[in-house]
Image (cartoon, rainbow, N blue to C red; front, top):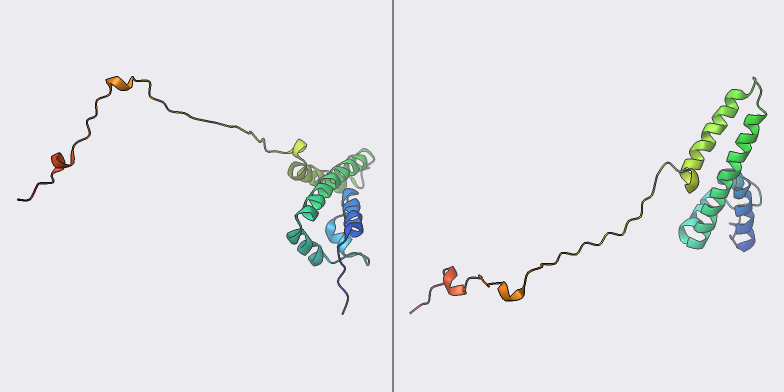
Length: 141
């Protein structure tokens, strides 16, 4: 039975650095000195600051992946151009989902306040609310 690694600040920094370098989390979890993918996901679920750091590292890692794909595209030849095109397509998709600058969605923030007011003089208003007796309640004798 193996001992489960505790995810401390040093390990968190190492995970985030590797993610920023474009290494996928699943590949990181297979390394000998890293916690399992299940353990990392448990920590993400239980620790909001860890989640925020992982998400930010993934955004930066997506940018790294895009830059690497662009570099590969510049140096592609006729033997590997199809693989490079697939990588560029993946990079474009990642960018649209993880990096807001490249996103497909446009977010519009709008603060709408509606106020309804009557512009009549209160002296001119006549109360036409019927009395209880007029509605049909009869007095008993």
